[in-house]
Image (cartoon, rainbow, N blue to C red):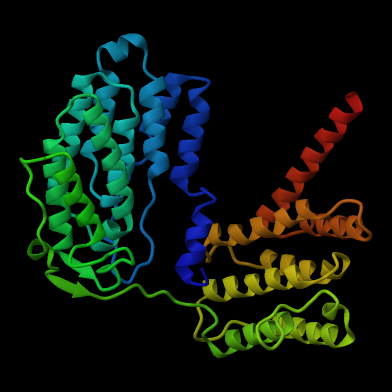
Length: 407
């Protein structure tokens, strides 16, 4: 995970991007006002996708959008509207906007998870099969979503067979989709997966096996000659951390603090010795003085320094001794420029730091003093998010005390 894309991916799991937040609002509104929820959903910008280059390490994740759409289709339409099949037209309009492979798995999930009549499901499956036949996306998006697409289309295929619905169009559409993308320009790091054995990719092998298992005679198996890449492009630029001289020196300093020769972890008893504490002091001095080098971007330096603070905190044997490190960490977070850096990546570290407040073990010697100092430092923070967090904690704490007093 110690790469540029690894931490950006973790940050997005917080679901604080605009679309995730908008979908959360729609879901909350659905319990209050169904018409308003539909209106709010219609105001969300439809997902749009620029081609992802082979050098890029992340693709878009839009499952929240389609899960919200499915929930609206199930719950936000009146009995009369559903009789008029307004919810089906709502889903059909969503399918018209599909332009990237990353949308296919969540849309297939919507279709197989909905409670539909046979004609309604047949109509949606036919529309989805048409999308598969026409889809032409970049290799990074195709490869990243390949497993999920296979899984969800497999479930859709199963539901159709259970309901007596023909899957020939779906299989034919999937065949065209796979052949088109496997034979297009490919990224060099997506050509073979660990699960690929023999001349055919595992995805193609599973497709052919499904055809044989269900005796799908109208659709031909995919041959190896059909899926030769037209051109092999580059690979992702991972931007692995701890490679520059300053960062490598910091990491080696920490490793010598955390591990004995032979890579075994330093014991708690060893961490109580004068020698270990002297080494810790030296490491903290290096960490405090570490400045961004020319070889690193602002984000790379920020992530690596945050990771060092967190690693040191986990290595210290006593909570009171973590006081100084926590304060330095908060100062570093407080000084980060939100106007020029990635806010969601900053918040990932901020969230990790502030969650540690809640993990401080109550009742242990020195813990209450550490907790009080941390809260005071948060309350004096210049960073608006840190300050807001401290006020939120204070408000919630006051509410809890009030409820306890009333009981």
